[in-house]
Image (cartoon, rainbow, N blue to C red; front, side, top):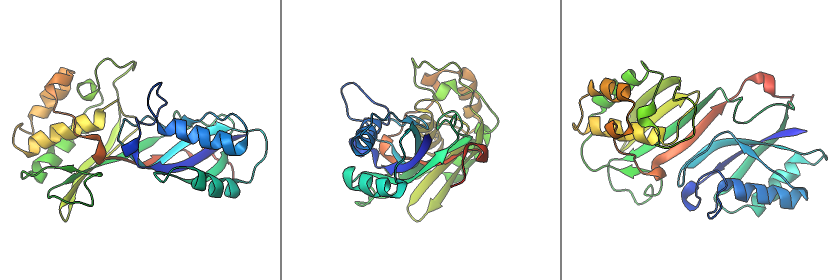
Length: 249
């Protein structure tokens, strides 16, 4: 049987989602917990990769298990077993060929910027003390929707075969003293969201003009885009799947 597991994590203590040879990752910790409690070697495939320090409010992975088990009991036990910064919310059956990564229709990320010093959000937002022009930043978001190829925002020396991404929405919202960038796409390149945010911040600070974003994207050159904002402000918030992969829950 194939199962999807829905969980969340605070990424501060982890070197990203994917297992690393010399650093602790969320995947490694989750596989260890499932293997220990199910008493069977479990490998999980995540819906995507988050970099070191990035958080996930909603993440999915799939794993296979032939022996029956009590899902609610496992959720209870695994949440006691896991460290405080990883929480499992659901485990449910899916179709045998359902894939947490390849069947995902879209992923939504939020990036949080604090406009004032806040001791309670220090680990979960990037502090920008200079005024940002929100209108210009949102005008630039409209330009993002006009393109499909985003090599200029991709980390160099990656093994991807295509830089095409279908961005479905991108915008900024301001609530009290916190700015949140919301972006949804079918897929994301490594470092893409953080590079986009850094470029938009430069526009908001007046270091770049809105219309310059066209030339940056067309250049396909990472050096032309803005800096990568720190990881702690980035959250994977939502992943959508087609109904056809699910069994009746």
